[in-house]
Length: 408
Figure 1 (cartoon, rainbow, N blue to C red):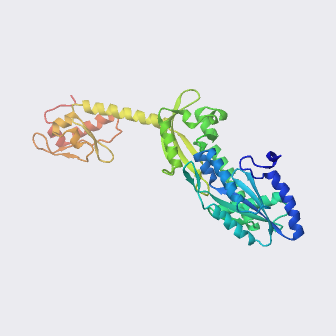
Figure 2 (figure 1 turned 120 degrees about the vertical axis):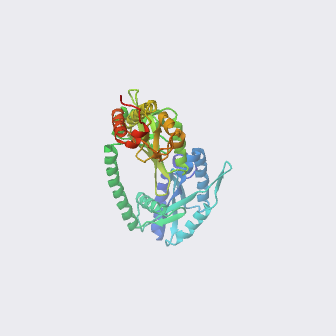
Figure 3 (figure 1 turned 180 degrees about the horizontal axis):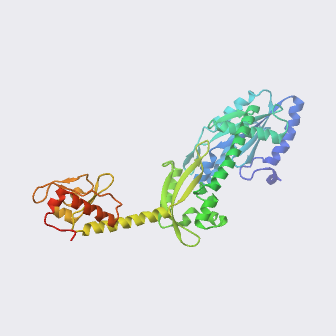
């Protein structure tokens, strides 16, 4: 029946009919001392259209692409849909390889016209790999394999390009595949043994790989983690901001982003985590997936909170002290200026905080007063120890407080 031998979407012959047609064509070619060209055609960056606009648009483009291809060939040539966005075409009665060039030109020209669907314009191009019977092989699976190798080499050159199969191309492909396999092993080792949590997320923002570090960090089993989306582990409104940034990544507006979030653990507690999201692209610049690293910064955040609390305590001590105190940080900027200092100098906090003033020239008797130089991080006991020494040892300050006993 036709259903068994034809593609239901495009109506083109399928692989089953391709095998039958090849057997017949091969016999004719041998008898007539002619060649057969097998063209393997891929729609350039078709995946982007499918992912962005949906499968309905993608299917319609496939149907229209099939029509355009059929229009370029003779009735006895065989145009088949091989699978996905790939087409395999048998061209009979070829005398020389150059006979194919004019056919390739016709194909490229047919795809110069944009596809118009739902009032949207889509630019769709092709890449073509060619293998020849009997030059490259007399076996259909081998011809398909070699045409596929040639097609992938054509893709590296951009849209509407072609490549004839050669042994050099296959050797190059084999070398690349071996390098990729080595790198995959290296990546897997690094991925699993990394001190940071790592998860890989597809273009639709669904997690598909996670390392043991992240699983231990959150306490989940692998299947529990992978059955959820990353935002399901995030506490609070930051998940919305993350999804907005992911969309910006897809649109090429940003190259990556970092965000500190609270992540929910299996024990229903939370950790503070710093996540870094970056896109991973193929040779054509298309985003294949995202890599997300997760660093547990709970101890850092707790230390920051403790430090902030210590600073607040120090500020209260300084402000409540009857002794004029100012604090200068390691950048020589005044960070604290208490009320007693305001009374002594006549300068308000707003006038001096953030400045690098170290000499305060004005108080009631117009005598210069040496401001007290302190560094952030001095504890309370050390603060008064340093301050007391300066009061006792500095003649200038001692004279300014003549008759006042601060340490009685």
